[in-house]
View 1: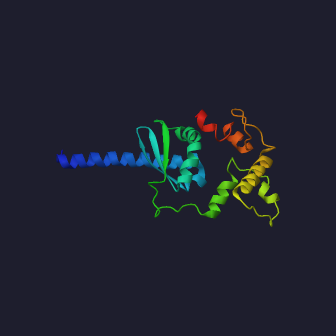
View 2: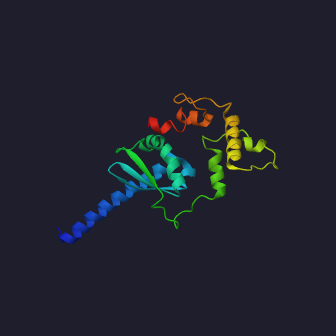
View 3: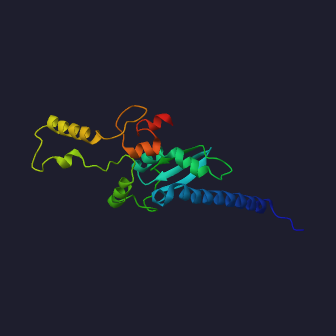
Length: 185
């Protein structure tokens, strides 16, 4: 029976612990990719779980804000099959390294907008105004915008919580408008 030095034993113990943490992190990365799907996974990166809160780096502040609205649904999918449940997720672009992954370009943003629940597929009122007409002052621009909003919102269903016209995609996803959804969470 060989005796090992204390340094050797402590080194082996540290390597074993580090290996376990690396395996847990790898499982987290794999389950994150499944929970959010390939499109979102491309612009996010789970960093660590600290006191039950998952920190996730995002490609931009816009990504962080949009993902906050989907936080609860992502948590439900992420916690399936986990022995230790994650209590919350914090999104931030501050730890995003430009060398690791790229920020979404205009084509990617257009694809994301096509699937966004707040997107309306009908034509806007601006498309109905003649090309040659120009607005002379700020009040005229506001009036034109307000008329466009009224035309666009006429056929929309109402939010059951606040009664405002709501895009159908928001009602399908959250059962209320995007302004009322965070209040319920």
